[in-house]
Amino acid sequence: MERARADQEHALAILCGRAAPSFVVVANPLHEASPPAVPPGLPAELLGRRPDVAEAEQNVVAVNAQIGVAIADFYPSFSLDEFRRLRERRRLGHLQLQSRIWAIAPASRFPIFEGGRLRANLAATEARYRQAVAAYVNQVLVAYGTSRTP
Picture 1 (cartoon, rainbow, N blue to C red):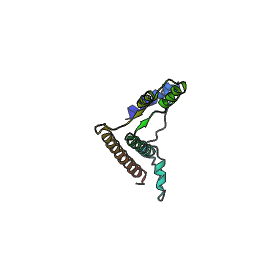
Picture 2 (cartoon, rainbow, N blue to C red):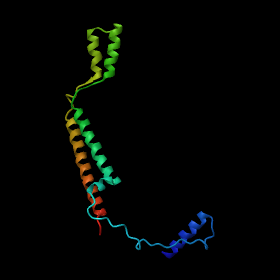
Picture 3 (cartoon, rainbow, N blue to C red):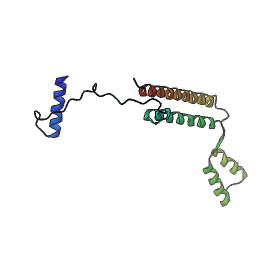
Picture 4 (tube, helix red, strand yellow):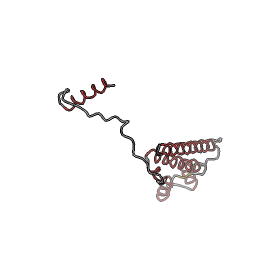
C-alpha cells in the first residue's frame, strides 16, 4: 500500500511539473475523519432532496403517465390535420359527399379488433408502474438507512 501511495505521489509530481523526491502529499487516512453526525429529528423531507430518491420519484411519475397513454389507446383517435385538408378540399369544391366520408376514414382510428393487444399493453404498463414504485420504496429505504447515525 505504501508502494502504491509512492507511485501516486510520483505521478502527481510529474503532472505538477515538479521533482518527485521534493513532492509530498500529506497523509490523511479516511479512518481518522468521520462523517458528520446527523442530528436526530431532521424532517423526512430531506430524503426527498437526495438525487437518487428524486430520480426514483420521477421514474414513478413517468411510468404513471404511460398508464394514461395506454388507457387513451382504448378510445378512437382523430387526426386534425386530415380534417384541415378536408376543409380545404371542400372549399375548393373538389369533394362530393361520398368522397368526403372516405377522406375522413384515414384520419380516424377505431380500436375495435385489437385481439387483446390493448389490454395486454395496459397490464404491462401497470406492471412497470408497480416495479417503479417498488424501486422508489427501495431507494427511500436505502436513503433512510444511509442517513441514520451509527
